Amino acid sequence: MATLSAVSPRKRLAALALLLVALVVVAVVIVKPKSSKPQSAKLSKSEVSAKLAGSPAALAALHAQGNQLLSGGPDAFKARLKALRGHPVVINEWASWCGPCQSEFPVFQRVSVNLGRKVAFIGLDSRDANEAASAFLRRFPVSYPSYTDPSQRIGALVQAVGVVPQTVYINAQGKQVYDHAGPYESDAALETDIRRYVQ
Image 1: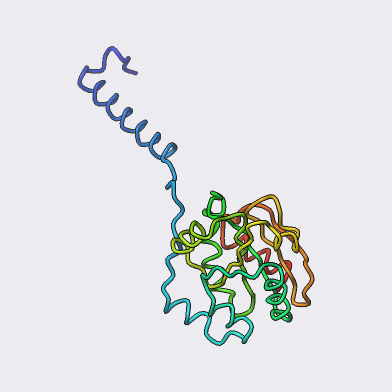
Image 2: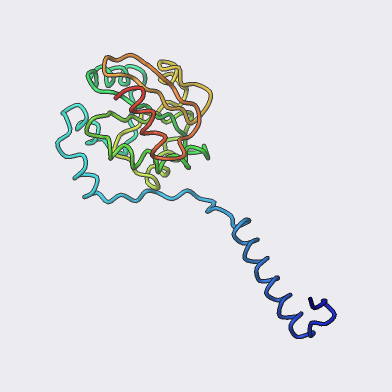
């Protein structure tokens, strides 16, 4: 077996160069930062319309208000829940200033379209300014409306105060059955909870 001293300087340099390149590649793969800004699901209007076509009237009314901020406080919110009786409801509390909300919004963009003919989705914009919330929704458009809740009066109705984001599940009979604190990181995780608790 040849010793290191018996290997020519040129071969040693080539071996060291290869080792250095390999170490750089490993470092880039391991340390490569994630994109700092979550990206919108970028669903086309025609795709959304096609997937939501044929929705029951109460759900179609939600879709017609897609991506809007609605006022009206607790009374308007309770009236909407009453109108949705007979359908499972997923309420997502969010805010434009909330980093985890930004990371989960693409999940809600996709799942609300995929399941929107059977499940009602409602947003709850908590402790936020309307201008900031509107800018957020332009970045992450969704197929359902959000109720403004600057003082968490609506959130208090569904015990969604404190942690943001929070997702509340109401079954078809109008009973609150589950709440999930924190963001959903994948479509599969959100769809699993929807199937488990309200579908």
